[in-house]
Amino acid sequence: MAQGLVGDALKHHIMNAKKHGVTQKEMAALITHVAFYAGWPKAWAVFNLAKEVYGEGGES
Image 1 (cartoon, rainbow, N blue to C red):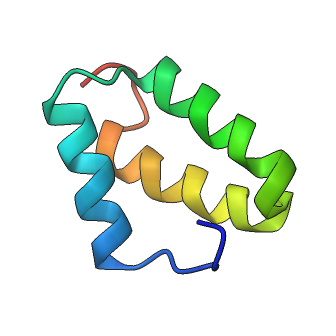
Image 2 (cartoon, helix red, strand yellow):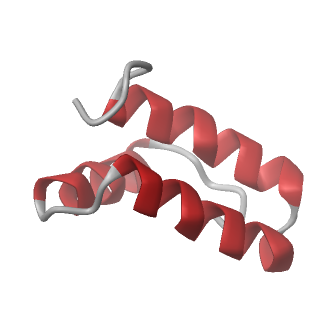
């Protein structure tokens, strides 16, 4: 996220985190926390990637 790379590798890591029990709320909190250091434009790109993994509807 800090480098602005939001490709397949990051998506795989988010999918793996979900598979290991990281909830959508926890992922959002993590991205928000990192956004203060990496920058909000990069965070918004990662939020969109996380939405794809978790689905728009919640804990799917």
